[in-house]
Amino acid sequence: MLSTRLFGPEYASMPGCVLVPEASIWRHRFGGTSWKVIDPKPILDGPALLLVLDLSDPLLDAFGLSGFELPLCTYLNCDVWAHDQTYSVRYASKEVVMTRRVQVRVNELPPAHRLPNPLPERPVSLRPMTPKEYPVDEQAYWDTCDRFLGGSNFVRIGRLPLWLQGPTDVRCDCGREMMFIAGLGYENPGSRSVLLESSMLFLGEGAIYFFFCRECSAMRCIFQSA
Image (cartoon, rainbow, N blue to C red; front, side, top):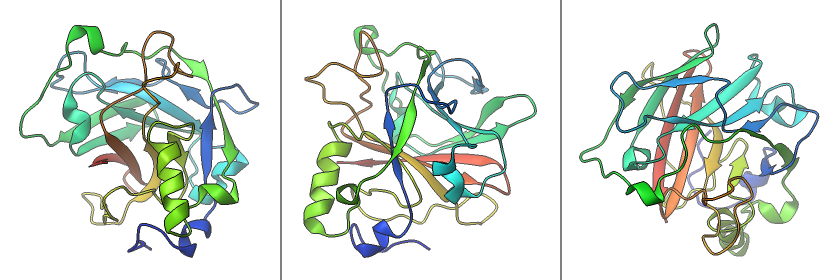
């Protein structure tokens, strides 16, 4: 059920978690090449594998997904990420294939500001959100936004998004409402990255939201600016 508010008690009704930059017994990982990401008509170096979630982690049981992994990907080095993207997740071949992208004009990042593609793989883990990390009221909403945009909780995984502009009804091409998987904010540009050695994970002043259709195995990414 889509929440119609930016904050409220409903945001604590479904468990969520945040990414932690350390290894665990589960095979969550940032970056790498364990899944092949394909855009049939790529721009620059094409999209990149961002995160692979190990669905055997009990923290992800609420998704009710039967696959062994769930890959998340997006463009990094041009602003395709700021527009609607749709991918097909193909488990048999471990491929994620772009089926649609929507943009009016593509702006490429200058070479000095581009992120590596593929991103260097590193193991990561998830931890449950604390009560203070759910936007249950207005003050908690602004506090969680501060940690999501330029803070320690820049990757939030769960069943309800931390919206920046307002709730959006995200549907698959089949017409079904898609399930929210994760939100990607950005790291603090003034601090050292916890995931990259020479760059910050920053894709603009806003957040990318990842949604999944279990019936079609389709992944859709949308963006909201801060």
